[in-house]
Length: 319
Ligand code: MTE
Image (cartoon, rainbow, N blue to C red; front, top):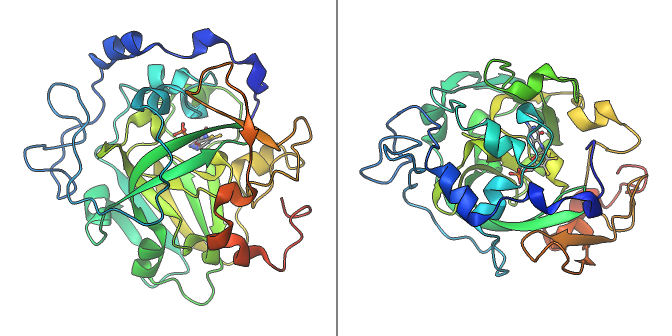
């Protein structure tokens, strides 16, 4: 990222809880849309008093960590979402008018089922699970986030990719009217990401639609974003509008912007440093700005589930 070194993050970039609660009073994000995703009584992404709607029927998962999750305030005010600006507070401050409904997701490419789907229709076949995951940003900070989402493997299987499909490519909405950061040239828009089919069908990968049991806030990628906890956070593309099954490796935003710094795989790897800083350690957000760093784990600690995907790959070259 065009990133500051972790030590450069000023305390003023982190919103205090009282400030956050004041701002929450005028959160009015989503348009009303009924759907089975929501707990009874809630009609849409945002209930009338401005709070985020509760999601219904969420199963627990053995993939969840028992580490203490970060506060909702940490998770929703310290963000990277360059479409809304480059400072950590920008996504929170600039995305409250963003409309995650109505929302259409296009499924394209080498699959038996393709087409344009309304978000609620897209979600209907899948069951929600809570996945409490560590997230390690390439900038050397980390959080623990209680996502609610659906296994990406279920989504991939549902659309029946053909034998030609070797990758899944994702794109974010590209709407300069709603996303002020798109007027800048920090990246080539739309934001793009991709996974191999084997990665996309690994049981850890999810498409997240919620946090802490409620609908996902705009700044975290409403209405739907990718979460791959063994990879650096930038793989977790937000506000997805297109899923494309491709035969060749898709171009990805940070790799296009700085190919020597950000690879396609982006697996968390404490032994392969970023050209400008070490990846050996990380700072846990919320532990206090001056809290000591702790060691970063290979594959962010998820090696038992994913290491086999890369056994024939030179991870220094394929970073
Ligand atoms: N997706 C889009 N569309 N635009 C972005 O700028 N930033 C990425 C990723 N997804 C980004 C994005 C980066 S660098 C990180 S670390 C995570 O989102 C941050 O997710 P969070 O803000 O929910 O913690």
